[in-house]
Image (cartoon, rainbow, N blue to C red; front, side, top):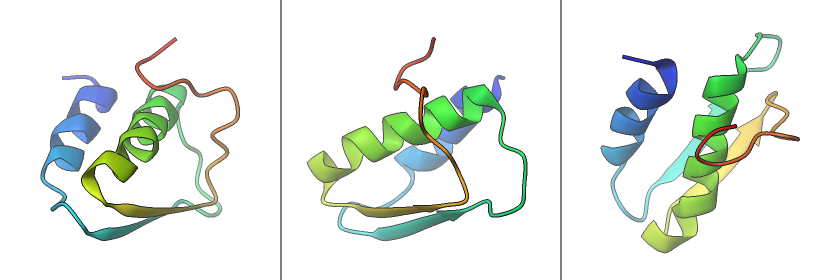
Length: 66
């Protein structure tokens, strides 16, 4: 299973209306994981989820992949 797929499964378990913080300050984050996070951030408002991203540069990361 790819990292993006694994994150997708984990994100699906986040309850609607939740608050979530991604904190990877000082840690390397692979492109596929950045894309998974970008997809979650994009979809979060549809589920009333508040997302904060710390230490992850999502510039150039497109939701859904390359």
